[in-house]
Image (cartoon, rainbow, N blue to C red; front, side, top):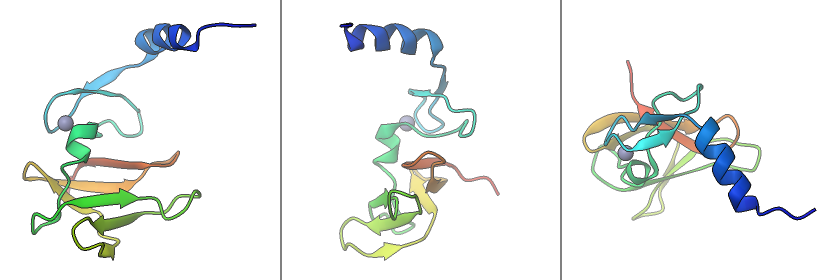
Length: 106
Ligand SMILES: [Zn+2]
């Protein structure tokens, strides 16, 4: 059996994937019911701490976990709060791995 996987994926993804606008910049983001306000990749890459230092987020292991790293210094912390375009956001591990960032709601 040979099938062109890219063709299959295109068809399925376009018809079944829903999108929501990125809460920061309005770019369409694949919609997960569990993370209805997740930000797009672009905004994810802009996440900074409250001092404007760029943050990277990682899973602690393949089993999950959450870790934030100040990119400049390599300083690690477990602070979930970050800022994207001055919008206060909350980063956390996603249910199926990876990291999700959504605007913070108090
Ligand atoms: Zn965005």
